[in-house]
Image 1: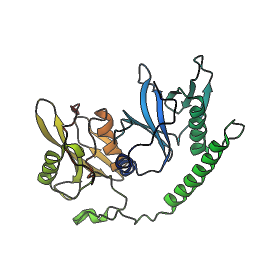
Image 2 (image 1 turned 60 degrees about the vertical axis):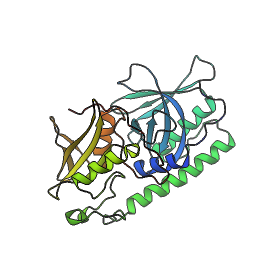
Image 3 (image 1 turned 180 degrees about the vertical axis):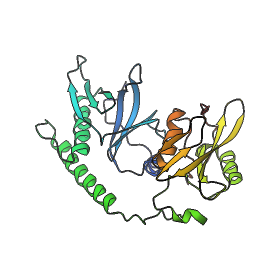
Length: 287
């Protein structure tokens, strides 16, 4: 059961890792019961609203999300009258699916629905009964989201991440995923083997200095290292699998591996606070 008191924020280290992975500001967080079109029943997720995206985590302490939902294409949001006391239900209607959400705190439910509407329409919802503190929060979020979008639109195409790759990769004109490292195949393997608690997936330059590669460490019968080639095709990127998968950017490539393995693959991210090593969960092989 959910606690009656507001949930405590994630520890600073976890917050920093989530910020690196998502590259988006945090507006709201808390537990939600989520039912997507492919789910047979509701799933209990720690949920964060960052920018216009809902990120779902298996628990409050997990640094990497297991699923996400972009609200930018939201068609409408409908509130539902719950027959259960102290329960708020609402549905997000998108072009390809309807997502049902529930929270056991009606007040928190109002915040969720108001914030989802706000980041979609970029305006404070009208005719909604909210507490003074909730209204103040909405106005603050609206100001931050407007500023974020302006900065995103004004960011020069030549802006690059401070840690630039070498060689042909100096021409990359967009920020890279947090798990990108300018390392060789051998170096990536050593990083994953020596630091399993930091993640099990690295994005790196390919051997031909024109493509990219994903290196992962799997725990099935025994630790195994696998490499997947990612080809740059025009403005897209194609993962060379049995059935090739084409995606619009490298962030989507990393997301694909995470989602296909149900979060068992986690981006490898150095953490200054990491003091001990723990073995990762079994990984579902990609086909």
